[in-house]
Image 1 (cartoon, rainbow, N blue to C red):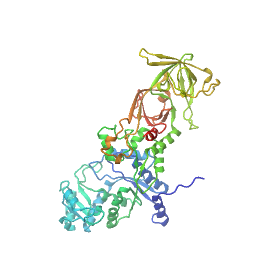
Image 2: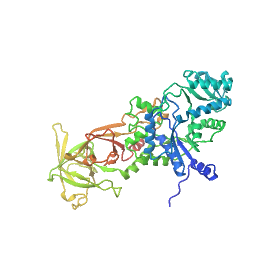
Image 3: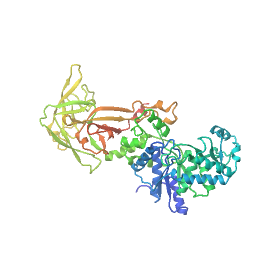
Image 4: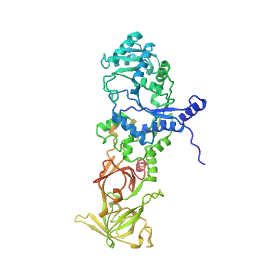
Length: 553
């Protein structure tokens, strides 16, 4: 019997709340800002929030934190929804912070009327200076002495558009000597004459994230508002607003964000990579975005398994990207269709084969008992990988060389009899004989060989472009590496094989099928593929080659 998995600290909190009767059911939310595409770090948060609700019979809202109109786009909203669904989750309600603009305005007005907020005409530089330092208390300016009536009047005028951007802000009146700098009269509203992707030009004032977030949670009766550790200092303001507005007491809990080797997790940095053309868009298969990983062929099941394995903790650490790749390999090994593709062809002519064409059967996936078989055409002229032949071979070389035998995968044993070269001495083809009695599945030849090669029939081969992707960065801890992070981009992160040769079964498979190109790695058909030109992306190698490089270093 397997041991029951221990609870993480958030699950312990939830179970205690349900047991004590504090809540009869739980409600969580995933609240992305629609200013970019989601990355693997967001996947951890998605799996946590939706996973908790699923485990404890609750629900999860998808709420877009769209309070900054200058950075947000509908494109990002749609991509986020696609990513969440692709990961295997469905939200109870699709909501937007902009749904609550009227309520949030009313909340701010309530704080003003209670003397707990005021309009400040100071510049951002003046406000920053007046806040003091972590060791020096801040000082309130004269604008804090405005009466609630004056503040309410000016706030209404701000909404009406009477003032320019940056000319006034609304600040909560809390404690200018607090050790938590975020409580030193934080800004809760600012003027921004900008078109909003949902509300258009209805508003020219917008709530700050710290003000909108907790109140949006409260409006939705969120029981467990789960954030990453950088929001720990924000919790005091979250609680202060809810307490003074006397609204539903949502509460914030923090966990360690995902930091992963050879990867950046910053939307700002990912946007730089896109805008400066270091990658080919947000869904470039080298990106840490969920859409990039989907295009690269990472299964959603593997990402969920990865998030489950790394767990939920209170302390930051750096996760090895090799664990994610392990989860991907483990899943793909179960589902990937085996296919033969030759990247760097060397022609093989079987001189004693007289058949025009023979259809051989081969397993689609030996790991899947229901995977079935496919037919592979065999003929007199084949391609093998050039690296699988050596004219002068060392001892214990088990691939093809003069006088040596190898097995062709799912076919016959062949023996190299002759090497043909051009005028410059380059090998153009090798001539072999085959053993008719050695057919795979019915071999009566009695010959044992140690090498097995993949191959394709030249006359039946489909041509394809193959994109071999590797890690985008060449240093382990990109976030803490010296210099500009772009200096650490791996220049060899993409190698394109422009003219590979594939067995024809690849012409008939579905777009979402996953493949193991035998002896080459795992691959998926790219969205740029057409009926005239197949394009495949390498998802991951068969083994972790980077681990060997690290050991060498």
